[in-house]
Image (cartoon, rainbow, N blue to C red):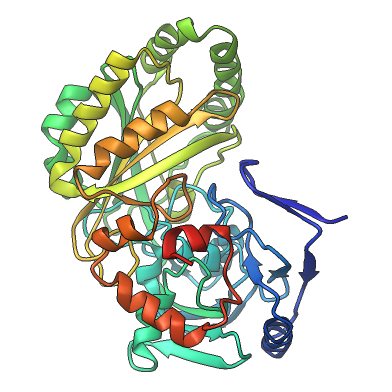
Length: 433
């Protein structure tokens, strides 16, 4: 019997029918047939969401057969590709055309359609999430129709479908606005948390890409600044040994061991975090943008992330820090803070406001409910919007208050999928029955 699980092990599906269409026509036929039979279906990417957004209830559509670049125009930077293309494969493919995505998140394991559909983002005060780089898409709707969507064609569907949690249909191809390939100078250094919070706007606005990781129970944050290099500067990547020590040994193998210690001896977590923060050392290197943006994350965890108005992020961090200190909870995972520019995508977490993202994590063998619930209560006072692919408890009534175009999205959904072929437990939670 077929069993599917997501990467984190938080969601699974057993006994579902699995379809692997190899063309647009086969996707359309599969969707039409399933919908006519009253079956509910979901397109599934790499399973990197923590929520149940892609869990199939009856039929799973795998888009592995639509996983390549089909057209690339170096002059315009427009690139069309199959929706099942993984970001890692895409980045390497774009590099062969001397192109790149303007911004990326910190892993490359997702498919492009899964990444945009859940609102995946990187960091950069003047840049939006991955979905803002989409200039066109092809959507198969419940009756088997194929809609071509862009700012000029089916614009309302385009506004809804770029971040849609798979609730409108199956995206089969995307056209991205890419940029000429570029190098980034990465500067990573630990700084006192009060210094980072006190100069947050200067750091966010003064770098192309800025983020920091704060270790709970300490006063230390690891800051990361990534900036485009001047003309004539060549790559100087991290040495093989240093890269293995920092990115594989410390960030994965040793981090896994320290989290296992935290499971057995939670009282040691503050000391572990103090040690980890003191062990951080500054490093600087220059490499291709996608190699700087993306890293390996092999330790399994649970994650919740909320978007808040950027001007309120320091207040949120201070409140969260106060709760951690009072609660007695032990948090071995750092808290990640990033930024993004406002955009106009209806269900984007950055819709209509410059945004800061706060992501909290907990090792998968440790209880996370108390911590995540407290975080959710804190960000609620700031109009926090949850990342669609990360753990949260909000329902349609609460989300409607936080998204000005929420009902416009539902109207498009009613028109494209009146029979709710693309529904599952998660969409019923966030959009209502």
